[in-house]
Image (cartoon, rainbow, N blue to C red; front, side, top):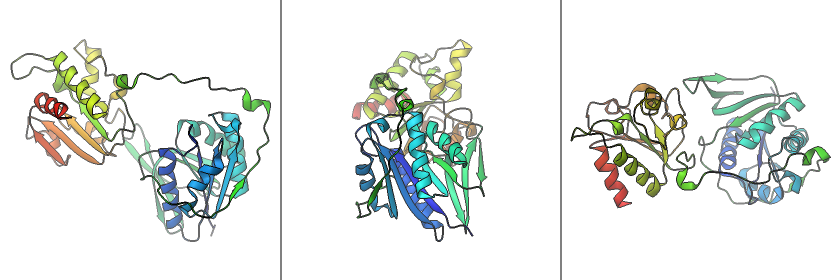
Length: 343
């Protein structure tokens, strides 16, 4: 029987600390180590001063800590990241490498797996341990199908999606950190990050780190009790609520499809906001759906939402069929507007 060595690898953020996705992934690696009998846990960090970040997580129970530090490892660069990962993986002798599925590592980890001759599974959504067998779960076809996979080949690289585990929190221990030297070359400096461009915070409606996901349905654009459509008022209420709550905005397929059918649609909403079988599968602590009917394709997109609530005037809508924790039988215009005022 193979004795597994689990390696957690991560990169630092601009401030030198480990980001949320990395700390969540570390919790997953610790849990995997706990469940595999006889396994050992080691950890490695890449960054300008990776040693400090490694010390910060030394209480995770890793028997060894590795750090690759230097200014050339400050930014996301394929050449330097793959070289650093190669060094950490070979030095540790790891059989299972667990990494956060960040944009930076989504590029570099597959390259490191290729260099070492390992196998890789990306965007892993969970794992199970049955004795000595480790299986992972991965979504396919826009999360409509969940597959359970295992591999006999080693080393086995897995990148873990954010939102699956709580952030690791633990006091530092006395585990020494081994600094690894990676030979640099001119190739490391061919790619440079000269700055960032991003929309203003108020213009950004998709906020993966928000605690609340607010999903708007097509009912916002339909005739209301007075027989009139109140599209401008609906937009003001939704944007006002998002501004006050800092929630992330989702949409039903019916609502975003209206733009292609020549109907009125919100200018701040696109298919990128779509939640459901053919849209995104977001991960938020809480979800609030308004003017949606809770159809199964839409509800599937909520599979990773912790607490579900909905607003609908119809007490027999799809949300009432055991698909939500709390259903408010109320007018969404009045209720969301009132909540916005209270906030």
